[in-house]
Amino acid sequence: MINELNLTYWFKNINDIFMDYSQKSRFLDDLEKRHIFINNGANILLVAHLDTVLKPELIGAENGEIYATGLDDRLGCAIADYLVTVKGVHADILLCDNEETGRSTAQYFTCPDRYNWICELDRAGTDFVDYGIGNELLNNKIESLGLKYNYGAFSDICSLRNIDCACFNLGIGYYRAHSQDSYAKIPEIQLQIDRFMQIYDSLSDTKFDREETPEYFDFYNYDDVLTCEFCGNDCAEFVHGYNICSNCFNMLLDNAPSYFYERFEGEVL
Image (cartoon, rainbow, N blue to C red):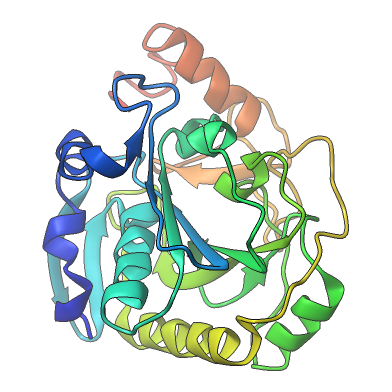
């Protein structure tokens, strides 16, 4: 299964992938809007994002684990492609950019109104979340397969516009996503692929309406609350070896390198 994921390809330079898919790319020359839409005329949409916090690099695999930077979310891109091209899932694929900065290009995607539900593949571990844009009945059916419903902060599906179907984000077995020592557990990747196939085989023809439309998403509701090392906010994520909240992270993006230079001891993030 791991060889069939074609990870070597999906860890290429992001610009090369966009060029490979230039015929399926929208806003190709606009870095703020570009995304890839593989239209298979399906009633299911798979979503992942190509941008990464660290440069994507495959390091190796041993003891049932894959070691790489950029598993969030190049692994999700690889799994989406694998599900369609190898497992025979009839689904469209949306590959976004700028998710890691909270500005996902999913917001510029013109979403067809034919989807029964939408699945993102951009989550650590083996649980699932819906960010308040899911469907209780769908969640119950997913939970019946052994997946734990959890809480998350943000991913591309939160930025999709004008959709009426339920969305959820499925864990795909990676850990320490934004750090140099990120890794994925191969048995968990296989488990989550098998679980997705169960969801797909039983529910692909069933429409689940989106039940809630929150006005705003932020970094909150984690089981393991992390405190930001810079402002003390209890809504942090582990990024580059530091616990940092979205406000400080966005300030870093807007002001780097000067704002956090001394705090990060000159490290280039």
